[in-house]
Image (cartoon, rainbow, N blue to C red; front, side, top):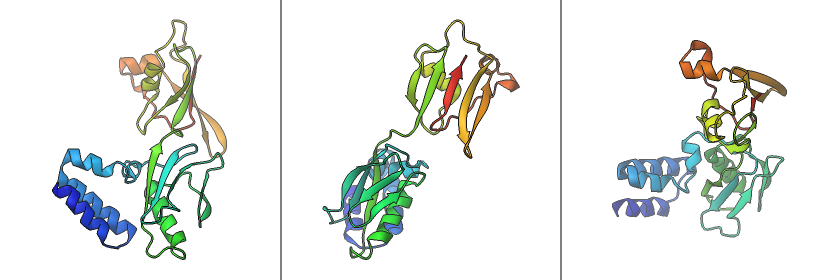
Length: 208
C-alpha cells in the first residue's frame, strides 16, 4: 500500500523523464521483489534488461495527460513508427528509455513538460530460424541469452541422421553473411571445441 502511495506522489510532481524513471526504480527496489516486478511491468521493462526495439514489436506510447497522442504502435518493416505531432521516427536498435527521451524532446514544442512512457507490449523481433535435421524446424523466439543448444532442444532435438559436428549459425554482420560452426557432440562432452553460441535476432541455425 505504501508503495502505491509513493508512486502516486511521484506522478503528481513534474520533473525530467530520466529523473522520474530513477525515482520509480528506487521506489520499486524499496518495495521488495514482488512489487518491484509490478513496478517494472508497463514502465519500459525491457529497457531495464537491456532490450532493444526491433521490427514488428508492439509498443505502448503513453504521454501523461495527452490521450490523443498516447497510442499503441507497431514497428514497421522499415524500422519506423508514426506518432501524432512527431511524425515518423526510426526506432530499431533503441531502448524504450532512449525512445522516451527522444519523444519527450520532440514533443516539447507542443506539450508543456511532456512526460513520456514507452513499454513493449509484444515482442516479435527476437526470433531465429531453425532448419534441417531437427524434429520441428521453423521460426522460434529467443531471449538475450538463448544459445544454439537451447534452441535445438526447443526445436525438438536432432534427428537420427543429423550431422552433429557440422551444425552452424548463419549471421549477417556489417552487410555480410558469416558462418559460425557449432560442434554438438563436443559441447555435450564438455570439450573445448564445443563452445556454445549465444544467438542474435535474425540468426539461422542450420543442421545438415
